[in-house]
Image 1 (cartoon, rainbow, N blue to C red):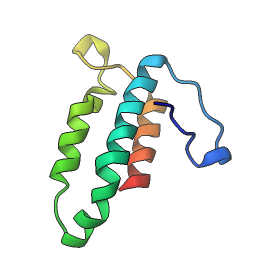
Image 2: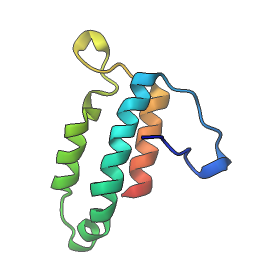
Image 3: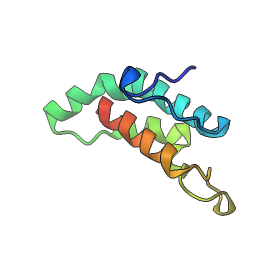
Image 4: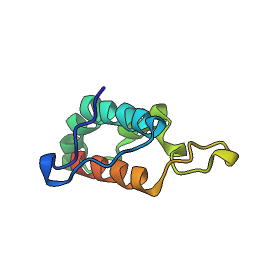
Length: 91
């Protein structure tokens, strides 16, 4: 999966390590297939997004910013920020 740049051409893409790009691609797929389609329904019902969190957990993203020496992915702050922006745009 290719990651589309955030906000189209307004923000030039920032080069990320392949491992970070791989995780972001998995998360973007989860956003596109599950999180975004359910977001309005969760908001309207005032419901906790349990399914969205389950899907995020399955991507491995919760270990994104945890240093590798502690079993995480050790991603950069830049990658973490991009992930947060992608999630907030969808939900």
